Length: 376
Image (cartoon, rainbow, N blue to C red; front, side, top):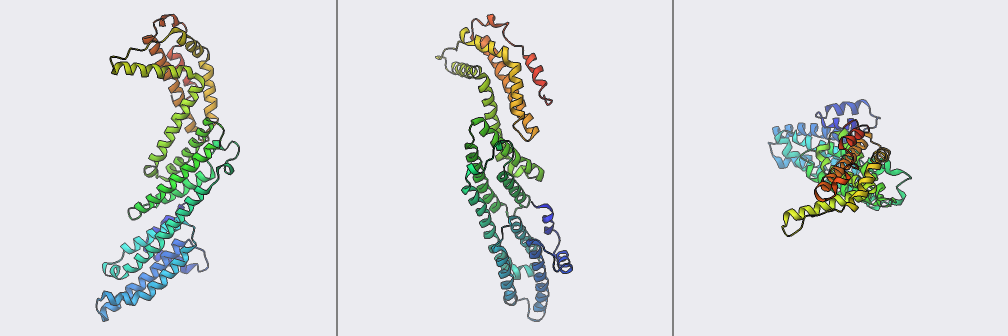
């Protein structure tokens, strides 16, 4: 995580030099020593520039030739420092530090030192991209059967947590200077992580369990992004995936309990729509023999099924708030399907009057639902 490391982006480097001088044997993050190195170099360069300007004139070629050995030494040091680095956060901080210190230079010094900062960019960015590519390669090479433990669908997977933490940290450090390259790398990584989550879900035995697994992973990612304040940058993609899976789970729950009623509603509504759009298409009719068993089953089971839906949903999500939202959507959709069922029976079943005593009053269903959701 970024934590307090982003503080390195503040100040001109003097505070870093003081800490490095005070604690010679202390260990520091790579971006800390990197900023200290640049601060020393820029201080020396400013003095050298002033001397050269006074005695040799403001000759850019002379200044660059004077600085060239120092540039080469710094480049070699940074190159060796990052060659084996696996700290993506440290690398992006070093990129940001380099950019900020370059922009803070007086115009004259900036022109003289620009080759150094160009070279540092050419060292840091390829290593950062290579490191993210390594993350992606490890995701692509993962074997799903070995990754899921028993009942693992309820909790965020280790891979999910690591991706969420890494991507959120990088998004926290995103600015206009690195947005394009960072967004490209994170989009690629995001796609591979989603592909792995789908492969992992595919190893689970039931479709319902697969959907629950994906929902829990997506909810965990969004939760980390919310904590880090980067939801506007990354939420739309994951929120869309989450909404689609929640909708799929809602439909799965209701089809498994009231499949006949749901399919009848969809079929008759589609036929009615065709009839409205095409005068040659007759209005649908629904036979009493088809409607009666559906109405009777709903009337005898709806209280029990609401209770079972509550148990089935609230016991499968680590985030109780998310579980409550899914329960709310499921019970709301159940109520809507039954309301639509009542409407189509009245409109398209000639013998609808004979079912009046069988039909459940909507206020009774709403009152029962309220017992299971304080958010209603």
